[in-house]
Length: 613
Image 1: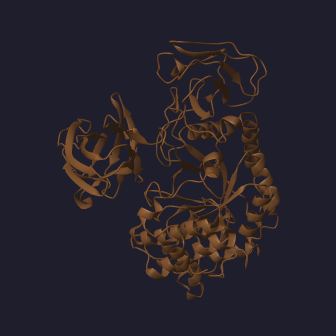
Image 2 (image 1 turned 135 degrees about the horizontal axis):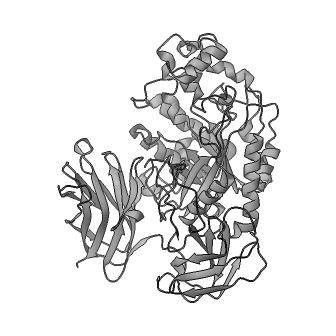
Image 3 (image 1 turned 90 degrees about the vertical axis):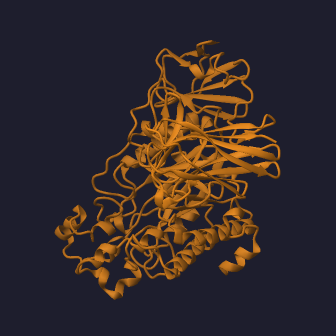
C-alpha cells in the first residue's frame, strides 16, 4: 500500500505532537521477557563480533589481520563471499521457538537486517537477501510462522540506519567495496560524520514499511543512529504509517528507540546492555545478550550466568521494564548448547516464579539492598553480584512480591515494609514462598517484615515471597500537581534523552550528571489538576562553565543560567519565571541547553512547579 495514503488515512499524523498520543499495548506491558536473535552472514567468520563486516575493512584492526591470514586480500575474498557459506542447513524455526517458549519468553525479535545490508527476509528492494542467496530461505517469514504457532508475539529489528557508513573502511584501500558490481550491497559506504542523503532515507523508509506490511510485526526495534537529525522526518512518517497500519489491522504495536530519537511518549525506550537506577514512569526495555563480547555467534564467547540474568530480569521488571535477551546461532542454524542450557535454566526459574514477573507493575519503590546498579547503556557488567539482602518488588492485584536476588539463609528482613517506613498500606495478612508448600513464620514491626526461610530452597537463584493484605500498592507513573499546587520533579523521575546522561546518588538525593552534550535534554511527565499560572524553579549547578538552559512547558519557553559556583554539586535554587496552563491535563516539562554550541555542562537535582494563581 502507498505510504502516504496510509499516513493520511489513519489516526496518527507524522508529527511528534500526534505521535505522543500513542499508548503502549497491554501485551507488551505484561510480557516482561523476550528473545532477540542476531543471525546473519557475519556468523560465518565467527570472529570478533557481529561488526566483523565493518572491521575486516578497517586497516590495522585485529579483524583486518585475521581476515588476511584466513581468507586472503579483500579484493579476492570480501564480505560478500561469506554469503555462499551461510547455508543454515540445520535451521529449524519450530525447534528454535519451542526453546524460546520453554525459556519463558513471551515475544521474539529476530534481526531482519543488520548494518551489513544483508536482509534476512524476502526483500523486494534488494538482491542481497537470505531468500535469494545463502540459505535461500525467507528466514523471517519462517520464524514468524513458528512464533505465532506457539502463541507468542513477533517483533522485528532493523539496524539498517548505520549501513550509510558501515563499509566506509573499504574505500580507503583496494577492496571489493570499491567494485561497482557490489555497490548495492556495500554502498553508500559514506563517512559516519555525514548525514544520509534523501535517496538512502527514502530506501530506508521503503524497506521498513515493507517489513511491516509483509510480516505484520507487533514490535519494531531500531538500533542507534536513527537519532541523527536527517532521520527525524522519516521516523515521524514511519511511526505514523506503522501505527495507522496497526489501527487498520486492529492490533497493538510498539516501536523501540534509543538516545532520544523519539519523544518519550511516542515509542518505547530501549537501554542497550544496561539498566536504569530507579523506576521509570514510562515503560522501557533492556536489550542485552547471553554473551558479553558479541551479539552474533563467535568462536570464543564469554557468557554471563543464568543467575545474573535472572537477577537482572527481576531488577528490570521492578523498575517498570522488560528484558529482551539475545541469542547468537551458528551459521549452520544451530543454537550453541551452552545458550540452550542457560535459556532452559531461566525457564525453570520462571515456571516457579513467573507469577511475580508476568503481568506485574512496579511497587512504590523498586527495592532495597547493598548492590548498586549503574544506570545507562553498556553498564550491565559493572555491578557486583546480587546478594540475599538485595530485594526487588513487583505488584499484581492485591499481592506484593518481594524477590530476594539470592537465597537468604534462615531469615530475610524486608526493611521497606517496616511499620515506620510509610510504604505499607495496611497490615500484612499472609506471606508465602512461591514453589514451597510449607507455612512460613513471619512478623512485622518497626524494623521490617521478617520472614523465616525453610531449609530447602524451592528453586535456584532468586526466591519470591508473596505478601497479601496490602492496599494501594502500585507506583504512580505520573507526577501529580494536585490541589495544593506544588509538585517536586526529582532527578530520578526524569526521562534522560541522551546517550551519556546518568543518574547519580549523593547524600542529599539523586542528581542528573554527565550533561556535557549540548544536544541532550531531560523531561518529566506532569499531571496538572488545575489551570492557572505556575512558577518554575530548579535546583542546579554548573561549576564555572557556561550553562544557559531552556525550560519548555505547555508550549512556552523560559530561559536561565545555572549559577556559576564551584564545585559541580554546589546546588543553588533558581527561579526561572512563570507559565500559564490553560487547562488541566498531562504535560511534559523539558529542560534543554539553550545554545548547544556554547553549552559547558550542568548538573541538575530537580525542578519544582508551584501554582501561584
